[in-house]
Every structure is written in C-alpha cells, then in structure tokens.
Length: 295
Image (tube, rainbow, N blue to C red; front, side, top):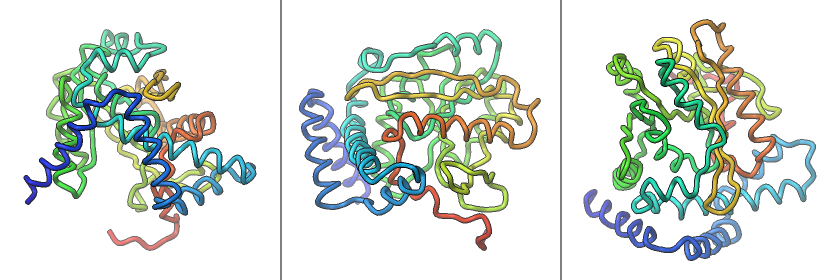
C-alpha cells in the first residue's frame, strides 16, 4: 500500500511538473479560493497568529496580509513539483542573489556554514542552489513526516539534479560530526515550534513569549560552524531574491543564547518587512513558558 501511495503522489507531481508556470499559477488561484473561502484551511490559526503578532494593525491590514499569505502558500504548493524538472538553469533564472560572494569567502576561510532560513520565500528552491554557491559539501536538515509516500516524494524532489544530502534532524549532529574532515554548508530551519521544554530558548518575539529550538547555537558552537541568515524575498510569482547576512563567524566566542537572540531578532525583522511571506498557518505559539510538559 505504501508503494502504491508513493506512485499516486508521484504521478500527481509529474503531471504538475510539466505545466508552464502561467498555468500553474492559474491552478494556484483556484486552490487559494478553495483553501481560503471553501475549506477555510486553518483560517482561525492564521487570524489569531496575525492579530497577536500585529496588535497595532487594523482589521483591513490584517486581512490583506492573510489573503496574500494564502496566495503565497498555494504558489509554493504548485512550485514544489517543478523541482522534478527545472534543473540548475531553471533555478538560476528564478532565484537571484544580492551577495553570493559571502559563501565563497567563507569557503576560502575554511569555515563550515549553517544557512539559517525561516519559513519564508521558497526555502525548497533555495536548498537546491546550496551546492552551487561554493565548493562546500551541501546538506539540508529536515524533519521526517508521517506520510511515507509524501516523504519519499519530497526527498526525491529535493535531491534531483543537485548534490544535496538530506539529513533527518534526529541524526543531524551525528552525521555532521562524521563529516568533520570536510567543509560543509548546511541548510537549517530553526523557526518552527519546539516541544516547549526547559532546554528551549524563551524570548519575546512578535509581542509574544516564544520558545525556540537551540540546536542552531549548540551545534554551531560544538562543530565550529559560521551562521548565515538567509533573507529570501518573493519579488514576483516564481521569482525570488536572496540576501545573506553573517550572524556569527565564531559562535564559540559568543555568550550563551547570544546567537539565538541575534537569530530571533533577524527573523522578526524579516517578518515585519515581509509579513505575508512567513508560514502563518503553523501553530507557532502552542506552548507557554510555565506549562507542565512531559519529557
């Protein structure tokens, strides 16, 4: 059954991958209408997140962000299958970099790199371009999903036509430790909601007490990785611009939680400038600092 499920979703992805972009975005508009107006997919979660994050905005401004978010979400959904056919040239034509030289400079300095990207723009497309930025070995840390057919398809799409190694998050430290003898550049998404345990980092974020995974800081200090923030803006449908900002060249020299705080503030700055380009549909604030959590 699992194999049958994979071939069904693979057939769907192959069908969408041959569509021209203009047709994909027509489909995206239909999906947005169904998702937003008919199914009302996570409307309550999105609205609550926006209201709490932007207490100074009126109802009209909140609704504008909300509608644009659903459009971006559906665009990314139809863009994903294109990873089966676009190839390196296709990504280069649609993703531009304002300062790509930073990656090469870090390689020349013999620095390993964490690319810390929030859920913004099209992080899947950015991952495909990591091996082209510098001679580093390219890796991406991902969280396993329960649907095995979807998981297998996403792994195939993420690695097709590029030298990118996918590493499941539970084995990330072990795998990176094995690669100590190489220079690596690693994609890591560190803005999702953790378990809400004592080891998480808590700070105010978008006017709310928020917990954060600390793996970015812990592993970068342990293995001596520079940390680069990835600012990926949507500049048009299927068009993105990426800028890099060096958050830490020597994390070991930084105090406890200093890197985490720097990352959080940079994510917040990005969201305030591009509010519709973040993933508002996830339950980011499902934990409170004083709750009792089973370990």
